[in-house]
Image (cartoon, rainbow, N blue to C red; front, side):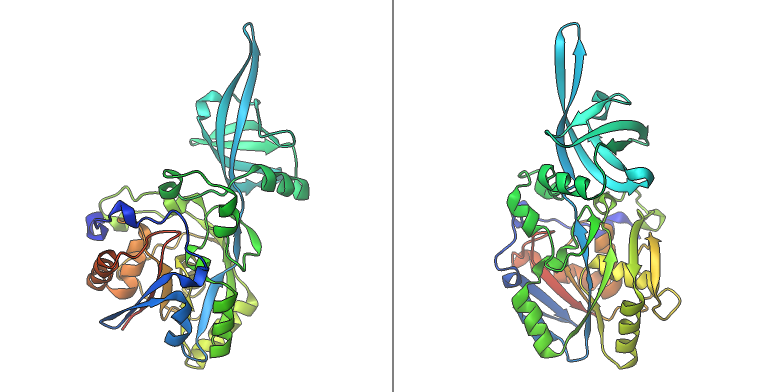
Length: 349
């Protein structure tokens, strides 16, 4: 399999930079067997059966992008350099790994100021990343980050506009609970109260798992032979309750349908032995054509980037030729792509 096998031409106008409102009014392409249907997300219950189970990722995106200043005093007085910080993951001792732009403008032990209350000291450089120590910890840090930070929008949105206050609501699911992600589980952004009520009325059950989506989700594949690609690791957990619920649905003949590729990757990690079990840890599972799905019966997801690992995942589920036809239809029908875009419901044969 070559990287070019997962490429396609996408008109730039189809990249969504804002979500639709209300959330469940987004369009939804339903691919079932060989048929393609143009629907809306609010129609999702019509395509599910009582006893089916949706698996949702309850991770919460932190406002991980910070803009600050590094200040120095010299013979010519005080000088300042503007520094952009993107938090990546917490480390022991209250430290954080982060991306700094430009990293070369900050020396070790120098302090970056993010306003009156929040600052961070550069402890070390590690493989192009920074290790930071903040002046606050615990709830004080969380509160200051909420005030000073911006949502870490994906690069294809951030290149077109800066994050703003609207994104703090738009780029968060309505059931976000466990803070730690720096990217949203975007298929779940379509869920609102109206859709959740309709699913409950239909008899569709729901389970929640947690996978903290990291910056690696946006890293490009750099090898031509995709089987040589190595996935970034992300922390996730399938609780005792979620594993028991999913197993019970399978045993009763219901379908298990993850909402988003993050939920799918997590339940397939927990189901590697053939039956899903409670699981917690870092997963670097890489799903590409030829993968044997153990838990997933269908998938609700957004439309993905060309040559991305997510294109490989949906190709594994539906078949490469089928996915090409689905994406050709989506582009011809002007579906909106990527994180703030429209949805698809992929039901394999």
